[in-house]
Length: 341
Image 1 (cartoon, rainbow, N blue to C red):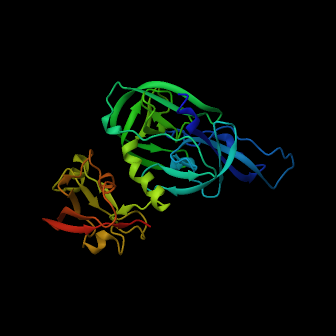
Image 2 (tube, rainbow, N blue to C red):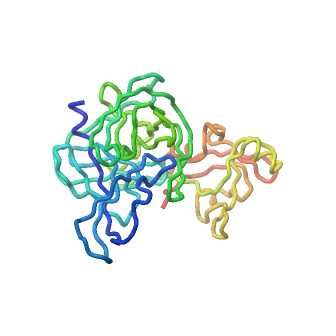
Image 3 (cartoon, helix red, strand yellow):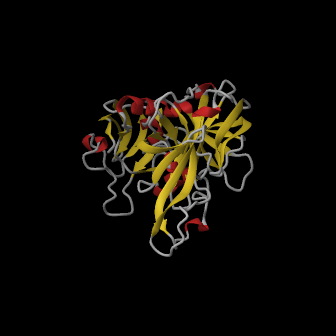
């Protein structure tokens, strides 16, 4: 741990807030599932009434991936575009941080501080993980106890779940790692390490009301994102351009559909929530509302292989073959993925 701990940092979230605003009636902003970044607030010492003051409203974790100050954390830690972010390094120094990129698909963000010669962590191979394997979590527990180290095992692999937050946010997490290593609010964005000190996951969520159930995004799921930011300074995400409802046996029965798998292309609640986004790859390929997407490049779309997860495996400009059910007939269509804006 002497080699890995110096590469783990605390991410501090600050904001100009009203002195009379009760920010901390819910101090852990994601009570249902996310390992919340929110810890105890700290003001700037002002004692007047009214107006605003700079206040620390939360804290998360992260770790260096380049020696010149590039840091991985969770997107939900730095999601507030109106907040200011700083990083507390292992030597006790605080540095102003800039958000370089927020991944619209994975709960990953990359931030940066100035400087050089920072210690870094290596990304390991999460595909080689075995249930029962020893893992170590490091992070800013409760937004207060920096570089807290806890040990556990891999409790489960390839878990799929929906994480919900206290502000009505929901996020689908797929193929994630379950561990019994202690992960607390504020640990979000910190590394989950194997016994060699390699990062095999990024701590992302806890199950509230349960004991020793934490989750981490697998390292192999985020390598492409990190490489993109290192190379281009941004995250470029391919997209298809459809709104959809995953089909299961219940949806099939309720809607008299011919399949119990795939996704039904469907519009949203608002009139502007088109089933197929105009000008998108799906639109150019001729997909329409009520089509069912059954397969992508021969892979069946079901609860183990979600549509968004499958799209994330490909790159912008890739041509995919979709098997769809269109107005009573099965057919193959070609789609060229474009960049999500």
